Amino acid sequence: MSGLDWNTFLAILRAGLWEQDLVLTSVPDAAEWEQVLSLSRSQAVMGLFLKGIAQLPADQQPPEEIQPILVTMEEAFSRANARYARVQGELLLQLADAGLHPVIQKGCEAAKYYADPSARQVGDIDLYLPKGELSRAWELFPTAKMASDGALVLTWDLVTIELHPRYYDIHRRAEKLPAPGSPCGEILLLSAHIFKHVIGHGLGCKQLCDMAVALARLEGKYDKSELREALKYAGLLRWHNLLCSLLVTDFGLDPACCLADYRPVEPERLRRIVRGSGHFAHHAPTKAATAGAFLRRLPFSLSYCPRETFATVWELVIGNLKSYC
Image (cartoon, rainbow, N blue to C red):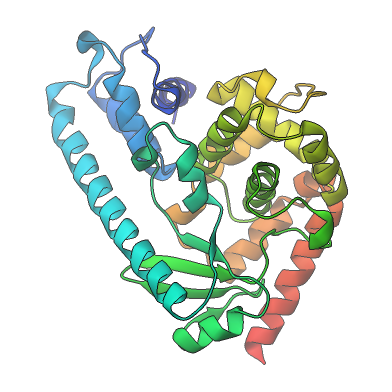
């Protein structure tokens, strides 16, 4: 993949993300279109990318030989979204009927921040269950597996579902963090979630788009000093500044949507991880591959959030040991 392909991909992705007209300085030929379309699949942003293509002028639209690929992508995207919506509806209804109180989180919840929520490519369904409700959920889904972080994982009509016993994937006292579901809490959750995937088996542009639109839509609707203190308490403040730097330089986020004391830094280290790994769900990593990724990224993760890195690695070790007992 050339730098030109990546830059073209990002330009079209930004156009779809912010629904802005775009005129490319260099129009891809058929082979280059295949490359950037492949990137949209591996980075799990097909819906946004298709919207971005629609923002191009008529004389820059993909050539005729690329049209069948676009049609196939659109059909696959629509089918996956429809299945995901049906499964989520059935799941929430079953949990509610059992007297449980699930809270939608992460990517499922981030979709509401998009101008067109249906443009977000679906993935897993992540739900938080308040204290004491996870064991009751296990009775509903006895074949579910316990993940190393304590979540219940099951598959429903090809959709992976994770039921989490804690709202934040942060190893700090929950009562000292923002209220779950609050604007400040959702931003903290997304930032921490992205960090965990960066230091593990990879990160795709989908999660970065989630963070960008959440920051943009929530601008002015939360206390930035509260978020700063929460990030500092979680040990994620330096990481969050790096994340925002990438969102500003590559994804078109307005710097005003960052923290009040935002100071841009060079995000190349994070950019290389995104380009090199792609969306983590694009391939199913084995435990050995995940462990290898954690080891390779230790210099990065320890330099940005050592406390949370150690806590995460320790949790994975203990969780995996329990799975063998």
